[in-house]
Length: 371
Length: 120
Image 1 (cartoon, one colour):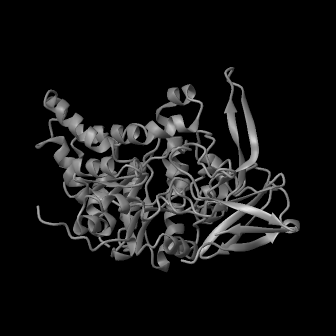
Image 2 (image 1 turned 180 degrees about the horizontal axis):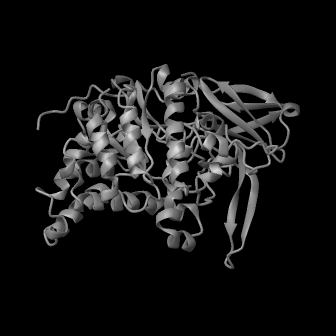
Image 3 (image 1 turned 45 degrees about the horizontal axis):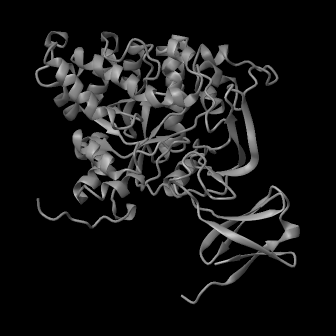
């Protein structure tokens, strides 16, 4: 190899910088006005503010939670509000971003909502609030769908197909049952493929109450859950997507796997290939190695990047799944475990050339999300 | 560079116990804490991801004894970076979770005639 180009020394040398996971913090006051019938009537209850003693309103109680004691709950980390165009602008300035895919906050738990029809109502309410309040001011975002109602979700994708500021379809995957490879979700993938939008899968650790209730009962600290949970649930989703041939059935569909770290990615690819050699009849639709489908149609967002104090680990791991092509920078701001913009860069510079770094920080995202 | 210089921070009267101020001195933001009448200086810069380490809440340390009983010790002797909640020992600058790896720079604070000074 020739000498590496070293023109990139800071985030200021990167254009564009695209955050592929910048969260909004929508609350009851945002969502309620957008609820349609019958739920606007059912939930229009003025109970002297006594219904659910929760700051920000009772609505969040309808999104199941595992009750974890987090750094935000103890006030150790202070979470910013991102609910208005001005908030988004401030966050993007703080993070020195050129563009961002805005993702939900409360609605990360949409896949856990116990009332399927209400979940579909929340989906539409969030998407309409997102468009009216945020995206119409010039930003890009992901619409949400509700996995409880795949047909309704497909209709929602069709309804918003001409909204050019919607750049992805997000499935809030936390606690979603059955896993996302199963046949019932095909309408969502079909609609997203037809709309030309990538599908983001973003779990939330509180989803443990949906898919791992036994483990939830058996653990007693947040960290015990948060460490294994995200990548574990992504592996269930992707594992079933491969056996059911989702990338074969929907060859023009890209998937964006979010917020799960990176070390498990090369592990999962090789483990799947290894097992596939012995169990090909479990995934008869596949025409190439499972890891090849992951390389071709799956992308991964970077936060929370483990090992930022260990560049050798980080760079080697990213190489092992062709991350220069498949990894996309993300912050997760304003959540307490967000990665500041230069966090990843300082390690990448020890191994990757300028083109590769630019891919990770924005060029790949520009292609995947058609920015 | 021409050696070090003594910089006025604030007066003892203006810095009550359990309070802190953040001052700009020679392009550095330095937080000065009053812990039970003793004064400590910390750089307002988080060695994790460059956040404002001294702008978060003051906390204590959760300690678990051999019977599994939890207690809250040294209340108010740690400051949390509001970005990610990393906790730093105000007296030493050491990170609570990984003290051997991460430490915020500390500064000696000197009291003279009711005034507080830091030397840089």
